[in-house]
Each structure stands twice: as C-alpha cells, then as structure tokens.
Image 1 (cartoon, rainbow, N blue to C red):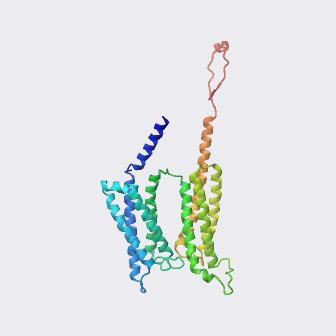
Image 2 (tube, rainbow, N blue to C red):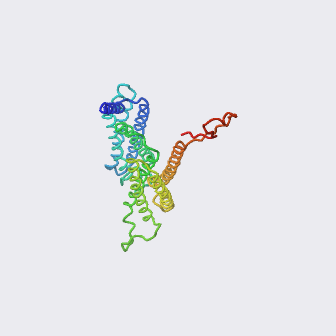
Image 3 (cartoon, rainbow, N blue to C red):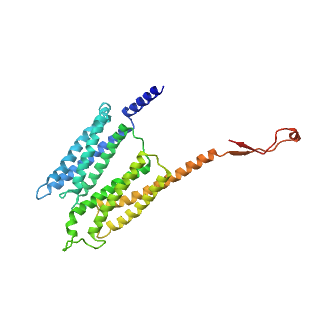
Amino acid sequence: SMADTDSFREDEDTATVNTINPNERPRRLRRWGSLAVFSSVCAASAWDAGQNEADGVTTAQRFMFILPLAVASTCYVIFVMCLSDIAYIFVDDFRIGGAVAIIIFLSWLSNIVVTMHAHTSFAVNSIGEIKFANLYYFSWASIIVAGLQMKTYTTKRLGVKPKSLVLVMWFAIVKVSFVMFGGGLHIWLNIANTCKMRNGEWQNEPLSFCNRTAFSVIVGTTGTVIAFLVMVVRAIRQVTRTQLYVEMILSGTFVLVFGLAAAVITSIGGPGQSVGDLYYSTWLSFLVSIGVCISCYDELLRDNYMRNKKTSKRAPMMIEIPETCTSTCSTSTTPTTSFRRMD
C-alpha cells in the first residue's frame, strides 16, 4: 500500500542519515587534524605578537590567542577519537560531532571578525594591509576548514543532495563579495573623517583614495545581494533556460564590474594596492564571476544536447530495403515499396 511505501522510504532515509559512511571518516580525520594544526599556529602567532607589544595587550588581542587555543585543544581530542572505531561513533553522531563542528565554525567566525577588523589587530593595520602573515593566512585557512567540516555534518543531517557547480560558484561570489564589502568598510571607517575638506564637503576627485574605498563597499554589497538572490532562486526551483540566460547576463555583467573594480581598487593609490582582504577578495570576485559565466554557458550547451537527443529519438526512422523481388512479385496483391517507416 501507499502507507507502507511511504513508511519504507522514511525508514530508508533515516538509515541513510544514521549510517556511518566509511569514505567520510578519513576526510573528517584530515579536516579535524588540519583545523587543530592551523588553530595552533594562530594561537602561537598571537602569543608571539603579544610578547612584542610594548604597551600591553588589549581584550581583542587576548581573544585572538584564547579562542584558537581552545579550538586547537578540542580538535586534537576529536582527531584522536577519529582513530578509534568505537570513539568515532560519537564523532560521526550529529548531536555530538555535528554540534561541535557548528560551535567551532561560529567561534572561528567571531574570531575572524576580530582578527581582521579590530583596531588593535595583530594581523592587519587600519587600512587592511597585512602585518603578520602567519596569523592572517592561517586564520583564513582555519575558518575555511571549519566551514567544510560543518558542511559534511549538516548536509548529511538534512539529506541535502549535491547541487550543480553553478550553484556552488554563485555561493562563492556571495562569500568573496561579502569579504570585499567587509574589507572596504573596515578601511572606510578608519578614513571617513579624513575624506572631508576644510569646508565640510567631500572630495571631488573621482579616483581619490576615499572614492575608491566607497566604490569597493558599493560593489561588494551589490555582488553579495544579487548573487545571494540568484543562489536562493536556483536552490528552491527548477532551473529553466530563461533563468540560465539571465544568469549568463548577470555573470557577464559581474565580469565587467569586478574587472573594473580590480583596476580601480588594486592599482596605485587604491585601498587594495597592498596585499590584504580587499586585494584578494577583489581579484577572486573577478575570477569566480568568469567561472560562473562559463559554467552557465556549459549548462546551456548540455541542455541543447539533451534536447537534440530527445528530438532525434522521437523522429521516425526510414530504413531502405533492397529490392530482391523476381517476376513473381507482379502477382502479389501487396504493393512493394523500397522504404518502411519505423516508429
């Protein structure tokens, strides 16, 4: 009956969620180990920077040391648990391992905000330039690995199926555009008072440092909002050809806008001239938008191929039959033809 079928499907889905995937275990082992090492480097870097502070450390600077140290300690314990068959049962359980992964990601998210945007940050200065490379790069590496680890638990728990590459690319634009917005806003908040002239008016030079910084904030905000809306629409509904054409136009526009932003923001005199959040996010936005445009075009080609394939299957086939009749064929009542329709 239908009730039995629905019950069977629910039991099957539950079993899929609760079953331990042997292929996932080594990947989680590597991620927990990597996160432990990366967080340890961040804690050690913050400690090293704090030892060289002549005026003492601030609350934000203490946070940059304490949180990575706590995360590293937790990850080392989970890494050891992954080595045991019995202990891994608890690590694989969403209520334990998944909850820890979510907490660690949120913790690192708060720490990345402090590390990259605090006035007394060890990693960057007031205009986003890198001061301490170890703390800067390993902080970003830590939050990326923490996000990937959290994703493995949440997708399995929610039963989410793998999405298309285009959806992943749109999500990448959301992330890098948001980092671009944050990097530009961080610089703007530190220079806003200097952008006014003595009469209280804003600087009128179109390519001034202030205007370029404001431009980065606007482009980052626009890219984040539009890419997020496209991602949501693609995730909740079936993709149509019209939607693909719209996405190609949007991604092509993004290529032009982010390309212009890269030229304006990262050139001499721009806020992204030096290596930092704004520099990386601006160029990544440009590169990812190219990837989205190419991926949309690839989906259109594949859709055309599938449509042509279906059309060729529906078309009738005409097979030529050689004429081998002798003189007796003239007495047959059935008319002879050299073609036969095969439906």
